[in-house]
Image (cartoon, rainbow, N blue to C red; front, side, top):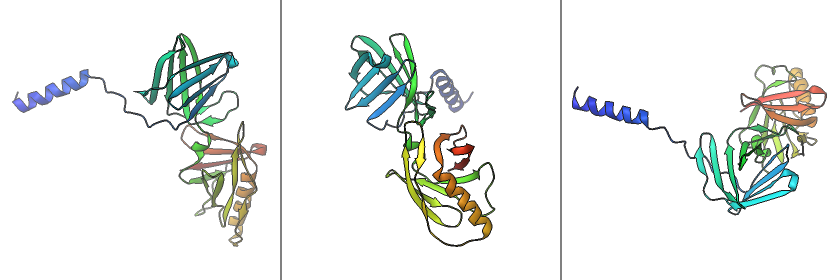
Length: 234
């Protein structure tokens, strides 16, 4: 075997024996909070400290946060918290609260000694904010050909976009269990009847929103009263 080919073979063999290290995850947005149920608990990471209030408030553990270690899909904190071994893994995957149904951007798994806890963390609004959402279905029906219904959620609590014909703006708020959108204001341009009908449907649905979910395919689904839905993608 030529020398160069032999070197390549040895390198490939060494690479196969060395497991790939997880890539360093993006830093958590701090302060970070997570909660879980059955038994109820709350985790806070802030100012270099980790505080866990568990068992419906009957126990409290604290430890230094330190630098998290990368794990597949997230990061891991571990240490001694008031004499108990506390291990916390925070994964970058959408988590739906099993009591309220509220989606959150992080899945949290913890071990206190040998007790295992699971829950969700992060700000739900961060799932909505950022790039524009473009509707693909309203009440289960596709949009008028060539039309656009869009939503952009700002960090200032405002939502804006195109309603089919006119531009609109309004406010949104996270509730304990869902999402509400206040009365929206739209410009008053006239368009084809089909567009105007679709626009009124979209705007009335926005004002009826009660909660949202992030589907497995990444789509945003707004749920309104009476089973109404709006599905959008980025």
